[in-house]
Image (cartoon, rainbow, N blue to C red; front, side):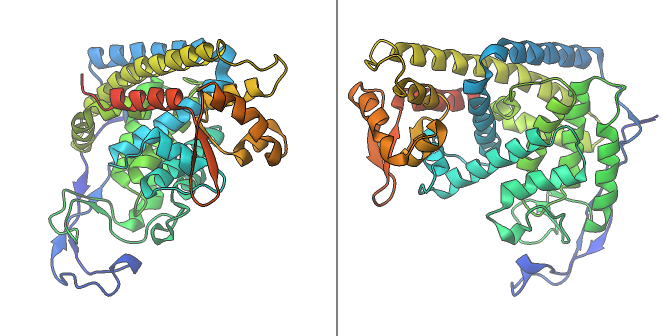
Length: 390
C-alpha cells in the first residue's frame, strides 16, 4: 500500500487539434501543463478520525433513508433520481424549473435547452443505476453516452482524443486545470476501476475518492462533472449503501459548490480528507432535504383525497398517484402509464382539472398539457433548499 500522492504535470507544446478547434484562429505557440494523475489502485487512505466518523455517520443516514422508503419506493424513487439529476446539472450552471423539466420529459414535448440537458442527465443517472452491478469502463462510457447523446460534437460514450481544460481561455495555456494527455486515459481509468473494486475500506470515502479521481482524469471532452456524479450513484448501489433509492448527493454538494471544487483541488494536491468530508456533509444535507420533499409530496397527495369525487375503482386515482412523480402530463404519457388509448385519457384528466389539482395549458401546437402546481412548487422548493448555503 502507498499513500495518496499529489498529481504531477507535463510540459506539452500547444498545437490546435481536434474537430472543435478546426478553422479557429487560436494561438499556435506555447506550452501547457496537462496533469499526470497518481495511481490509486493500491493507495491507503489515511484519513483523520473525525473524517472517518463523519463518513460512518453519513453512511448510516443513507441506509436509514433507503429503508424508510422501502415500502413505498415506486412513487419516490423516480422523483429523487430526477431531483439528483437537476441538482447535478445545476452545479454546472444548467438550471431549469420543475415545470420546464416536466415539459421536456413529455412524449412529443417542446423542451428548452437547459431542461433538455437535465432530462439527458436523468438518463445518465438511470444508466448508472442500471449498470451498477458492474462498474467498469464500459459502464462509464454508457453513462456518458446517455448524457450526451444529443450533442455529437462531444463524441458521446467515447473517451476524448484531444486536450481538455478548466478555465475560460480558448487554449489550455495558463488554464486552471488541464486534464491528462488523452493517451493516459485508458490506463488511468483501469487504475480507477481497480480502486473501486476493493473491499478493504469504508464505502463512502472510497466513493468520494473515486469521484475525485474521475474528475482528475477528465476522460471526456464535456460532461465530466455530470458523468462523475452519475458514477457516484452507481457506486452507492454497487457497494450496497443504497438498494432502492437515489440519495441526492449533488443536492448536498450544491449548497456549497466553492467547498466542493476546493476539495477537488485539495485531492489533486494529495489530500483526500476534504473531498471525503464534503461528501459526508453533502449526504446528510441531501437526505434532510429529500425527507422534506417526500413529506411535502405525501401531504399533497393526501390533501387530494378530500377533493377527488371519482369512484374508488376509477383510473382517476391512478392519475393522481402518477402526478406525484410526473407532475406534468399529456394524453400520450397518461395513456402509456395507464395502458389505455390516448383518446380516453381526457376522461381521467378532466375531473382532476375541475377539482383544481391540475391546470391545463399547451406545450407547442395542438399539444394539450396538464400540470400539478402543488407538486411543482414542492420540487422547486427542494431545488431552492439545495442551493441555499447553511
